[in-house]
Image (cartoon, rainbow, N blue to C red):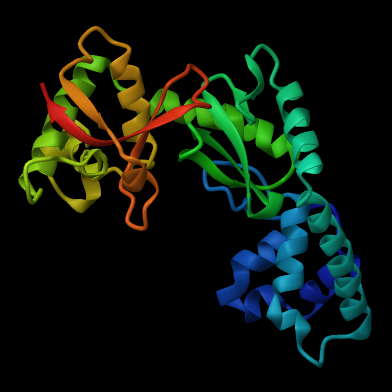
Length: 285
């Protein structure tokens, strides 16, 4: 068992055999106990302290009338502490402070603030849900690793993991170009009208971008579930390549980018990805 964070609760869980009795709640119980993994899928780390607190106060089986008073009192104390912590994290200055703590840990990486956004190398650091969760993304729109707890060490570790994800998903430009043409053809096939939306090309890339083993034996077992940012990561890399001129991108209008049914795709206009331009259609030259 991990370091004891909730003595009364953890003792009670063990004494009544809650892990065996509530098999449908094991994931939550393990996180309360500090076991298992953090909610961020790409991080192979135990749950952060704040995640354990959030799981505990939300865990309904520990709110039943028969729960012993010492356990209830401990949970109530954790609730008050958590509410105070979450209220603090909602403040912009606290989020800025936390982000700066993270950037200071990333030795040897070009980090800073640009266009009111935090960046490290080619990734953008953003907070979500009032500072409760953090995300490393390509531009502010395409997450690489999300649902990171508001803990500087976890966010810094997530940066390293995000870089590894990028290394795995970025293909050599000439290979990506072949898959890009296939994705465009698939999107064109299902398009009503003459113009192909770039978001449809991105959607079709999840099929067109499959490895050779899938095309040699197309079935569920050989299909690779790609991260959403796989298309934009490869597109950015390919556009820097001499061959990256086979398509043109039509600028999105204000309505196309921000209307109720907006379908724009955002391309970076600077190295850090803090500035973007909305594009709508992708056409073969």
